[in-house]
Image 1 (tube, one colour):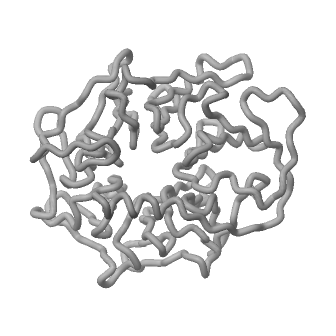
Image 2 (image 1 turned 30 degrees about the horizontal axis):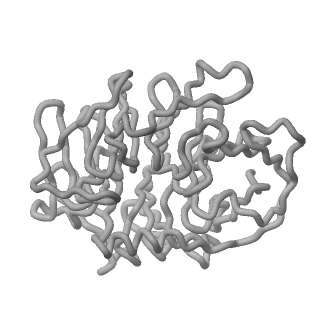
Length: 349
């Protein structure tokens, strides 16, 4: 446990890269004053944990202590406690079938419902406090294809039925509870094309749930490490599993193929995995930025390519085909073969 907490503390170290750019307006949710002009070197946040692009092409940036930032193409706005958004640390972002946005936070879950926000101001529904999630903080959130919302807490999974959040018990092999992080902690939840659910754990490997039965995959079955961060399914039906201490695993339904620091990548801590529109797999590697894997070759993007984020937590491709990366060191966007540092004033394009 001490090793895990040490690694989490390392994620807070930031590296700053400054670039001049055009001016962006900066406001908060309740501000009615004129926008404040700021220096271009000011970070969107010292730690950008999540990036999400909504139905309007706007960006939401989950931060590590400033709540969520929203960029609408013109204005960058921040939402946290004083703006009615009950969360400071954003640990997950997902969209449901009604195109509403869900946030996992250090206080619980927050819903941004588009249908209730026609007055020009954003309103949030907060599922926070001791009555939700046994008072635990959340570490992940996922809205599935049937419009069910799942959340990963410190000691397990919760399922939302539209009114209440109920515990969803996985068949853990042993009891492991903690006030901050445990073996049950779930960093990643996803649903594959066949409708199966996949849940990561921080010590018990991966659970697959088909609606009636569970299958657990661990190091005994070939998974590279039982401390799992994120799980995705690629367009070929392979499951990609990023781990805390063992690198990256690809599971084709029968066999695990593992990519580790022994020959493929720089470091075995893989916090995020993402597939782009070309079918290339992008993933983080602690201290080495990100890698792009095209099925044959691993291409590394690190400090030499302008990416001054050693602890990468989020990777996305936007609607324009641009790759964005965030983590300890702020926000970056890929332009050609180099990453550009995006601050509160851009550059956004």
